[in-house]
Length: 381
Ligand SMILES: Cc1cc2nc3c(=O)[nH]c(=O)nc-3n(C[C@H](O)[C@H](O)[C@H](O)COP(=O)(O)OP(=O)(O)OC[C@H]3O[C@@H](n4cnc5c(N)ncnc54)[C@H](O)[C@@H]3O)c2cc1C
Image (tube, rainbow, N blue to C red; front, side, top):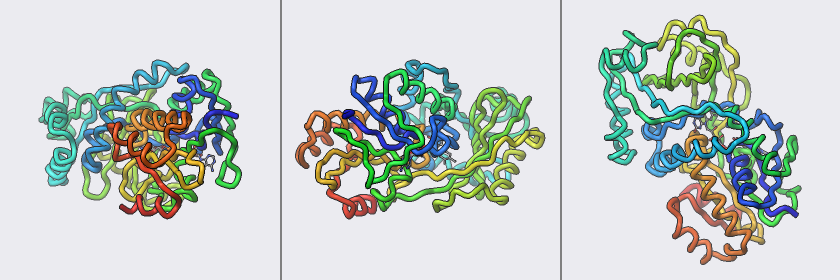
């Protein structure tokens, strides 16, 4: 019997399984889709690692998890057997003159939610020529902007592929194209549920927030970093990957609709990109795609020690919402710590859980439940 059965091989499942195998444990992973990761929210994500930019819509916990994870990603990538595009060239935030009232709102939200020293050190105002010099592809197009330096991004699909290769290298027993539900749980000493939205039967308060993106090929534009366009109705980002590939996103629509991208959303995304640089008019649309971000009511990630099944041997990792790539390394670290405590029999009761929680830098992510009712209570707290 393996030490750990990891359910769900999207972003968090792959990372946790890979980490546990690296620590010498016997790990089995069950994923309803294939090794490429096409069923995961992570497949569609832009994979920006932007804790300061995201502070405009996220609380301090998320910013801090993001800052810690940004330092950890290069170490993870260095250990994976395949290369993954990763850069820390900052985020550029711009707006059109007509939307200039959005700028102070954005700045106020970032400064309210992010640690002061982080915002002071990495929030640089660029005017005219400075902006043109920082991002020559946009020269003359915007009068002002902000450079949030040090922020990063990676290639989501390369990361999923490299993690799959890493799982094989570390001897993880992978069961691709294998759906697991609570009625057919695999045997293991500890179960780690990383099924994202697929964990909804066990976490009824979980919900999906649909995101739509376009992937385009646009040779010759040459953006050097993710660009965010402030707009009252269509806030947008353009994340340049390798080989002139751009991910343009993303809508945020309440609901678990996985149908194809709507005409309205496609028009909004592509028109906004065209407004950032008219050369996007000649870009070739490679893909319009949608996925749902797994979200808990408080919009925070959660590590839930599930005592409700009677054996106290299930850990649920969920609620990564729109920040999965940005925070996954720190979340996975904590998940590994909890999982190893469970395997060692150190998480036998509520007192032991409280002791583990008290030691955690991220205590507010850690929860214990006694069953489904408590999942709902915690999630609505
Ligand atoms: C449009 C969009 C843009 C995004 N952009 C960013 C971004 O720029 N930066 C960022 O940090 N984050 C971004 N995200 C968020 C990020 O993708 C998610 O937070 C992250 O993928 C969540 O990871 P997860 O492992 O919890 O879920 P997932 O990646 O969805 O993985 C869950 C896995 O579980 C599997 N599964 C489900 N049910 C079962 C079952 N019954 N049996 C077996 N397997 C099952 C699924 O097939 C899937 O592979 C974006 C998301 C979207 C949709």
